[in-house]
Image (cartoon, rainbow, N blue to C red; front, side, top):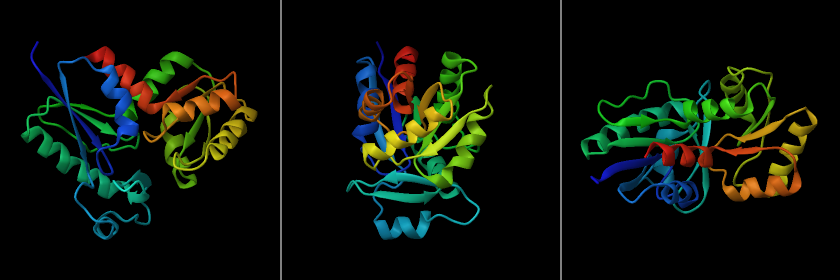
Length: 226
């Protein structure tokens, strides 16, 4: 079988095994994986100069290669993603996966298959939970308005809370418990930085609610596709 070249593109710095390990495990042997990051090769000072959050633009949180988190501007990131997509296509990528659940409506690929969790994850979750009330957890309080705009496009009245994937499990559990008290029938971890370990913590502490992890939904979908 011919080799299929799949690029995993993070908005931060690569590699991000916390995001990509589940995807790599799910893919067949003929899929060759390449990891790239919009911020690859940049110092923190350069990133803060070029990608700092701006008033009126949605913030995003990501991680650098040293393990530290950083907040970046979504509009600047979208431009950086497009530059990376152009380069990946030139390098021969057959498919490019954006490893972020943020909304980037202007992204395009001329030849490669462009896969965006922003559209994929809600569609999969909606097909499984129907009209249930989703409890959506985002990394930062400032992202809740943007996140709810996306999820409220689905049937039902949904609720949201914030807990960073880089914080303690206690903060995540507290957010989940708050959403459960507001009538959530399922939980969605709306950031690619959440992992299976976060899901396990919620299943232990807030039992009875299905938990959808964006990276896991993406990995399962890619396994089906390839």
